[in-house]
Image (tube, rainbow, N blue to C red; front, side):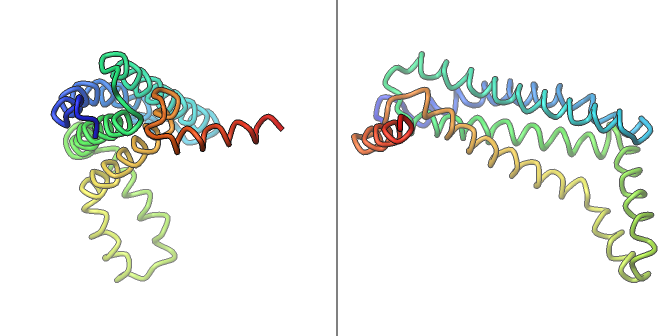
Length: 191
């Protein structure tokens, strides 16, 4: 890692940026959390897709904004520094978003979770035996915990991929080999 940018600096900046990214994600998720109140159909499906696209675009914009801001504040930052910073943002944000989702499923909106479990149980009741249904019911009792871990890892993977993609356009190559690869790629695109 570049000596001028310490891990402590990266993590301090990333925790603040991760909090903002988490808040944007949560705010964009709240309307879709209440879609279960709508009658399933074309309009609820379309609205669900639209809300997901808005959340996806907002997360990309916020991540890019903070990566560019980090580069401006730390002019010596390399691609590797920016990728690490983006990963730190993703980890910070993932912890907050997954904790919110857990609290939402257990305390804020348990009716939606119960309705989802009931729908799943009704859907599979004709296909599974009673012992299989009992096992499924036991597994679904841990749905909030499973959701916490799924969201946590999903957000980290999404953030890592996103910061890797965005860092290529924000900072100069880390080594001469990165520069050669970039020049070779641009030569092939001109043909």
